[in-house]
Length: 429
Picture 1 (tube, rainbow, N blue to C red):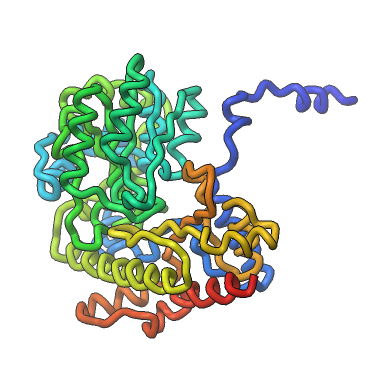
Picture 2 (picture 1 turned 180 degrees about the vertical axis):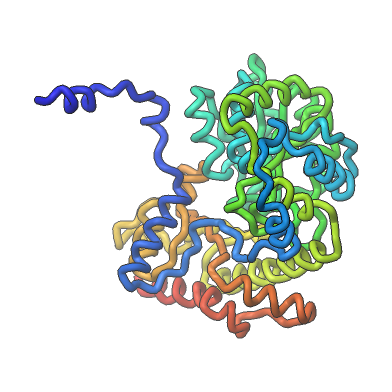
């Protein structure tokens, strides 16, 4: 055996890294692309990437600032942080200054930094976004999943949270709440947030309020728990979903004064890792947060399209005897196929993972299994209803805000065919 082969066999790889699988959303996206390259007709409901183009106002600003080459401040470009603090004040009524903001290369990277600097357990509603838990596992943190149910709209209840906190009161705990929610499309209402805030304050929790879909609440009525538990809530947001700029990789956290030491620790981590976000990207992103008429028109048009798809596609799937809760925001819904359990079992499908694989092979519809979101049992799949020509449809809605959107809309016909494809397959099991 060569010395090089011996080295390869004994590489000291981190056990925590080896125990964490590749991101589920990226894996399903790659498999979908492979099937498409092989000539299969695939409707990709796996990866939750915005179907809409980056707003023209942001693209123009990026072009104007493309020659900016200097390193920005580690915490972020001050005019951008000021625009974000104004955005939070305008949309949520919270007074937090630019000094409370940190800019990162996507909110995902900032979440990793937060879990690095906080010595605490992670508390997650089940279901929750796929990357929260793996990041905690990479840090060697303990993760607690709190059960949520369709009867409660897949939302964490105050009673469930209080019960957990009374049983695990010895360590500081970080709770992540995501609204509008990925994977369910659920949105917390005012009273629900007030009840959760009372529990959080009683048990001195730190909350990360993940609001990356905030501007895609179907009624434009996003609520944040930071309004009711400001002293313990960090807000996370960015431009990847409601501004269509996922590939720009820019997110932010905004802290309350009481958690400023956490912010300072994250700045230290940032200084030794990503240094700062790209200067042109930061400068161009200011326009996303300034509340211009162009941005308002863009967001309203995106919201109108996603509301029409979310509500109508959900209704069509329910007619196929698939159980869903009506979404209230974002790109997603959580579909429960338990009404077809007997037929699925006859075909060797006894859990969400095998359902996801078999469904992709049989119908060409790619979706993520509920297990990736913390649902260990059941036949649940997350559907990301984003596989359509968002640029073309957005352009038409901007020109005609009253445009009717339904299954006969040319850009949406293929997406709405999901219900017929699934219905035919399930009934013939």
